Image 1 (cartoon, helix red, strand yellow):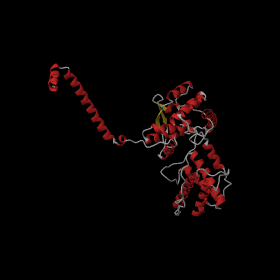
Image 2 (cartoon, helix red, strand yellow):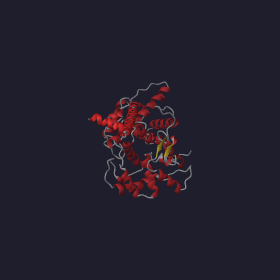
Image 3 (cartoon, helix red, strand yellow):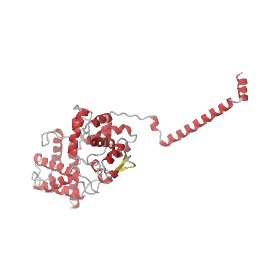
Image 4 (cartoon, helix red, strand yellow):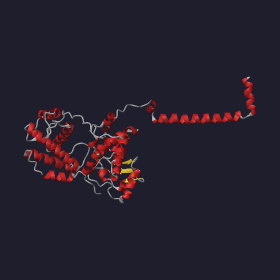
Length: 376
């Protein structure tokens, strides 16, 4: 089944492959090309994930490693990355963290941890290649401190804010925004690949197929947009195999910025971005904030959003100022709770029977006389 490529990643990857990388030394360019080629084929990979990497992942790898190689040549005077020393490597990342080594535009690097993780993966690939050739290579990255993942900055909005945004949007955009907020789906990669056939159980559920997901496929319940989607598909005369949302990401983001500015204003939200900066991906962040206090199970929330690690939730918990609300009742094991509940039902039944019996006895004249005698 055809999968849309909203970022045009395949095109950019092929374009990168054709690039001679003249900004790098011949040796570094050769090593980088080999690294990306192996990752595309799924050769000499590390970790549990096997198989070739996607085009969007490969182009991200290529750009990050290209920049790191440029920095090692400029600041470490190393034209062959395999010859770099541990000290040079630590000095490089320390300089990036402290803002001494900046981006091309002169601004400090925001997520040095991402570059650290990328270089670690690259170096482990290099070690694996050498091992196959019978050469042991020292792990220079072992003591590299991966900086904490930078907290995402996004336009935060509530369900009421969404209602204001919908008032300022055209029909197609209204449905799209409601869909994004309800599902928390990754956009554009997952959202743009949703077909009519992916809606099941009379549009009450959405099947996010494994082949279009960044992490894993999942079936989630639609709690807000079910009827709106059903109506939209009917009015658009879409068939089972049609894509539901055929939009251009840049154009949609431009429209959302206008809507965000009108509905939310230009003041910075608690997500550290203003309404005028609204994009499609902000819906995933705000959706997570909406669903977090409503899900009883963290695992269920992880599943809905296609997350593998609970750390994904921590930032939103902190942002919302959530507190520990566990009670003694919550501490009871399910089996214990079931036993207690059974006993309660039994007791209530016995009390009810006793009340019924008492009413019957009270209506009996002889029983009344007996009571009168005893009270005297």
